[in-house]
Length: 238
Image 1 (cartoon, rainbow, N blue to C red):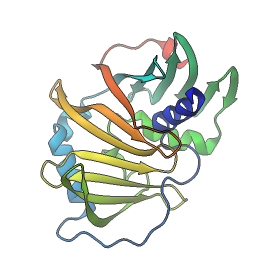
Image 2: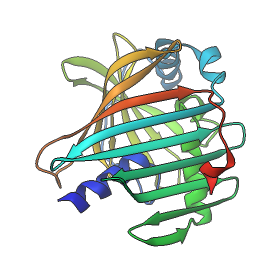
Image 3: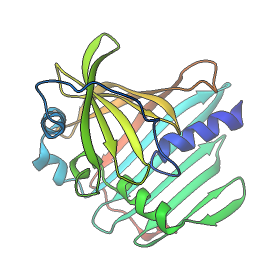
């Protein structure tokens, strides 16, 4: 069970790695909104493009409880130097770490280190951005609208993303508030974003729930620390 949850957490931390995200399915388009308008409403809802573009570095730390054990997941993003470090710590031990710096990177897990392939590096670079939604088109994703759905009692626009190389995701944004409510992926299952709170003028989801048929109950993760534009040293990319 612990190893299974660890793999799911790795999937959440690295949503863009390996394979396509969601299965193809017939969808009915949403009327009245374009993908660009949905993204624009989301950007405005969380604080606006001007504030988001002022983020140069971002440290995000989350925690979860797995079979009574505390698991900590941290991500450090440096958008100026295009580098990123993600790691999962369980019972004080680093069980998974991924580093991307420029055109190089590696992943270590369970005592094994593997260099990232060119394709993995290209897809992981999207995770360097604090809010990749602003960069979907620049990163080569096409966006189409699906049929509106209800997410936890809220009507939501459905946005379908496709990079043309088999990588796809299904994302849901509140009609009322513009906030992202959910993401569906093959890697991590259903990921719900809740309890948005303002940090330095920008809204962040402080609670993220993961549902997957491989685990008996949803996994709840909580954000315990967010640091914006903190000075970073070179040790983060070692």
